[in-house]
Structures are given as structure tokens and as C-alpha cells.
Length: 105
Image (cartoon, rainbow, N blue to C red; front, side, top):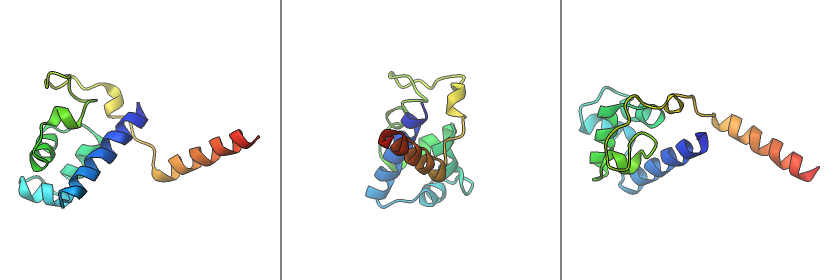
């Protein structure tokens, strides 16, 4: 599940980059408190999800498949794994090194 969420975050960040937007831009454009758009990438936040989707001219359920049903309704309550902490870059690198050592053995 963490891999799916990481892919979701990467896909959204890539789309923002392609649109020439930052998460801070989204906060300012939609009157969100500083950091909400960034936090929304990591954990559910309806206002942040709507703002990011609007900035990308799409719908939230098309960006966050883990948080919405395919018909566009939001999962309520959100699954607990949507609040689970994602591994840091350092942790992902260490896991990658560990798996490559195991493959070599």
C-alpha cells in the first residue's frame, strides 16, 4: 500500500511541476494555510485535495485513488493506511540497498 501512495504522490508532484506550480502556489491560490497542500500529499485533507485538483484542472478522485471510490465519492472514514507514515527517502534507499545485497548473495 505504501508503494501505491508513493506513486500517487509522485504522479501529483509531476503534474504540478508540468503545470509550473508549487505546493506553496496552491496554498496561496486557494487561500489555504501555509503547508496544507504539501501535507495533503501525505494524509487526507478534503480542502487540500480539492485545491490541488482544481489547480490541475481535474477532480480529486482522479488524483487520489486511495482516498476515493471510482464513482468520485470520498471514502468515509478514510482507510487507516492513508494515515500511515510513508517511508523517508533514506529508509527507501536503505531498503533498496538491502534487497540488492540479498540478490547478490
